[in-house]
Image 1 (cartoon, rainbow, N blue to C red):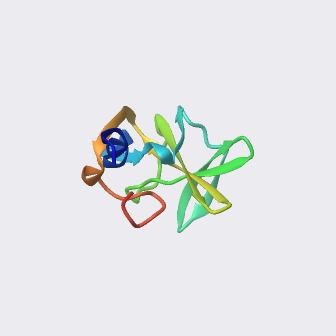
Image 2: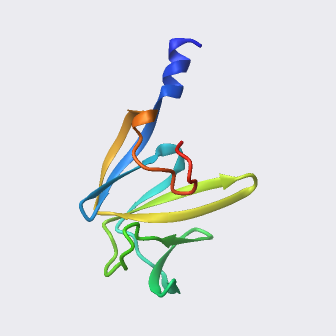
Amino acid sequence: MTDSVKALTDYIDVLEYVWMGVPFNVPMFEVYAQIPNPVAYKTVKFQQQNLQILQLGKYDVPLFEPLGLELEQMPAYAVVLADYQGSQFRLLARPADHINGVNRVARELMRGKSTFSPSNH
């Protein structure tokens, strides 16, 4: 394997963001959009909590709070994540107080797991 191809497999670009003082990162290939000042167009009950729903074109996108808390107000940003499983496509959003940007990290140092899959990417 050439060095340039090896570099593509050894490193991954991740979006780093912070929510309520907790740093998160997600592989860039999962990021569908970054929305400043998101506005919920409706609220639904989900697992005994109010769940904000964003509307992106023809898609309803749930805004899931990753710490298990209920959103009391809309966040500064919504990080919309996409997943493809065969011909199936789904979106969900995560709140962020601020987005630090994109960073290239060694794959083995990637914190956490994929939003949609229990296995590390």
